Image (cartoon, rainbow, N blue to C red):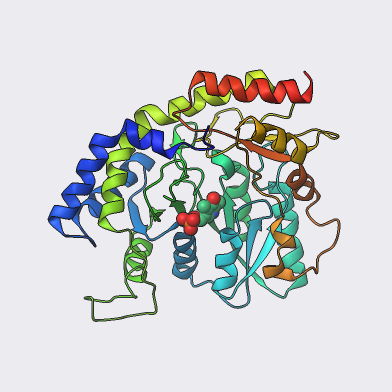
Length: 376
Ligand SMILES: *Cc1c(COP(=O)(O)O)cnc(C)c1O
């Protein structure tokens, strides 16, 4: 059994994908082919924002947003403590300071009360100027945008929505990648909508920012390619990846999201009595980048993982370490009681095999193995 079976996904969609790739090979427009523009149009339409600018990966997408807002030295950016390293890495990369916010124990997303407390403390401290909030839609569920938007407005901060795991999610009828002033996603193969290499995209309703993003992704180009108006990056989605994504997008929308939802409901029903199952808020829709349970006190994660491995059931720990404890940021210079929820859940989370092509008998095997072992 695969943790996320990309081979099965490819086999299911082989004809469309092979043709899409062959078309690019014959066209030889490997960079800036027409498929890139076509994809940007379809993604913007699906999400419901004015502009989509594709780029090389989800990390660049985040950094590009910070560059648009001119965030740098002396600025503070608020980032959840429980997430992938990129979210804070890009803040440090542009010279600003990431400030880590504890998360909600049930949703895994940024805790709005902690955010408010931290912004007030940062202002009082006076060392850094608060500029932006990186709100992450972790494991597929959108962050609490009603609360986060109120706080952002109160203090005049930008919201950068990191929907690397959230693409395809929604709150009511509003889709993920539409909640930020700028929103980003990643097409890394294992993300909800993955390509066959690296890829990313930036979304915004703001016309001038979209223009600036187009310049920044191509060496800060001005009127033409050899007129450079600013310092930018080389960050493009290549045509082969765009073609693959164009072939996969309809299947993602029409089939994969529903299949993930069915599987999540099955897991939740079967596992609710033995572990803490993921909680999706009323009116929220998760794209299920991961199905992550929390073990209870006394349940040994390492032993459970080893046992499942002997049954050829792969599992993973996202994430084993809070960002505030990463050596890259602070060395080991943190208070023991900083971000207590993140500290606790890092010890307890376990992500299960999960993808839209999983068979019923595989899903049954997973839940039976866990229930047997944890003694239900
Ligand atoms: C994967 C991921 C990224 C980075 O995306 P890449 O395309 O790998 O650079 C950023 N943020 C989150 C939350 C992610 O899961």
